[in-house]
Length: 353
Image (tube, rainbow, N blue to C red; front, side, top):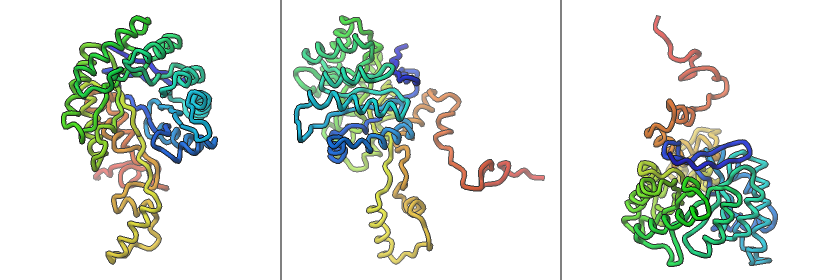
């Protein structure tokens, strides 16, 4: 059975068809995050620290590290990205003990990350483009690490799933020429937005089955791509992930965290409540308020996608005795009720005399 091993100094994450789904946290990435990009250029790593801790607390098995900031002071990523990648990796390794995924389109940043990372990180990524194959595969072999293989080549991203499968096969075969085994190739079959292509979901499920059955490789994807541009993206993601898992997908690059409700949103809702003439109990705290009105939480917590993944792990017998599902849903006792059972009664359910 195919297993891809990714390691930190002290922890191992395993991707496999008979393993729990592997969550690769995506948030340490400045792409599309102007605030984070500005912080990194200014040497401020506070958001990186927060995101690293929050994602691991939410259940991420691996953290993706991307240092792709285009500096205003120096727009050349070949100069700026390698030292920034090293800095972020060293910082994150000092905070959390999960394995890392080194994510860059700059070969120098990939090698800088490989040199800085402890254990056996996942490299993200190689494509079917000839130039990219010749640059990245020697690094994969030199450092003996697994690599994400993205199913596009010199012709771009094909809408034809047969073409994307052929690109994946080509990468696996070229990797073998370098002495890299198929179990160290994690194929990203490329998830298209369902809003732009009605068959995108069906395509991915079919592709993942072929990649598992014909190439014997593990798979990953950018999970949120499927819902891009549509309302209630979490609802779509929550359905997509278990279906992809059922087809054989073994990991996803995704956000495991549900971000807290902002103070602005709380103030807006309180104004709506007041305008409707509702009177709230005096002294109601914000967490009680947002829970009462279904806004979420004032605290960082695991997202709904994590709930769907853990349920799917249970249903596919990749959660021994349901232990992870039970732990995930365990409610912390209120102050003064520690050691008590349901409803705060000492010893649990009350027996009849």
